[in-house]
Image (cartoon, rainbow, N blue to C red; front, side, top):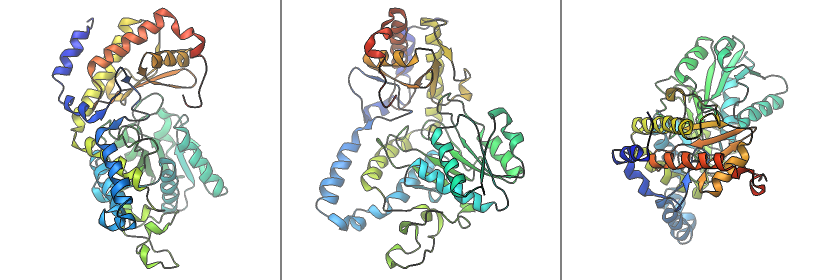
Length: 411
């Protein structure tokens, strides 16, 4: 069936999530398809940060650790995130960066499985995940081996040497979704733990950490959670593991009594022991506003709209510019995260030409045009208009202009 713009307008009229769009600051004339890399600004965030800066910091100064509840922000924001990823409030804390949290939990997991020396992942996983594992293995001087297995062979690679299986739930480049429940069960049968990177799924998919019996997880605050550039990340430790885990970065905020100022470390009970240094209050305040909005949404509706938008984009690209692009993401929406990745040898220049038209996606080397679909603030007509612009870029050949050939530090 050939789609028309009127078909997508009709979907917008019936969209149960349409009301959320008004809660975000969206630049006029821009179709933003990069929320899978950096979410947009919630309207409430600017006022919240102004209040934190001018009143809480500017007037109340250090008293705000108590009077404004700064000291409890990591747990409070973590508790909100927990509801989005299928966990209990006391199983998630917002802290540090995704990379730092990966290190903390990977190192802790290896200690929970003495006698096992392998951390298993897949080639092509998000680079920071692999780099952190490589750094951990180097630091432990041969006591840990990082082993990679292709996606189709992960289950059989789960031998009795494996301490930890670390995977990104939604692949950053292809958008393909791992079977969290199935792979977690396979890891447990082999005696291994699991650590899931939720950076490209938290706030986009109806993640169910506890239903899948996951052990550990980390995630990003600045993508679908709309926490702002460099927003604090979060980590999850299943309640059943919390007493056994001793964090490798035993900072003072993870101490059982940080303001007793004792010389010897004693881990705080529960998830709080995974805090390290003093939390970033401005970052956490901004993240809390983004998470509050997401926590109000029905994640089943978010997921359904995400899949539908991706399906429509794939159909419209095929309809408007047939055979122009390869499809790297799964065609089956149930196997795809909230993004569609196309391939073309001149993908970078094409993305730059689209950005010049006000359609913002991104590029991933060597040839991937990546488009994120964020259901809370994107409309179905945006999918139509973005597809039309992409087809015009292809037909006109404008991507060949010299101004679109230069590459910036960030792609």
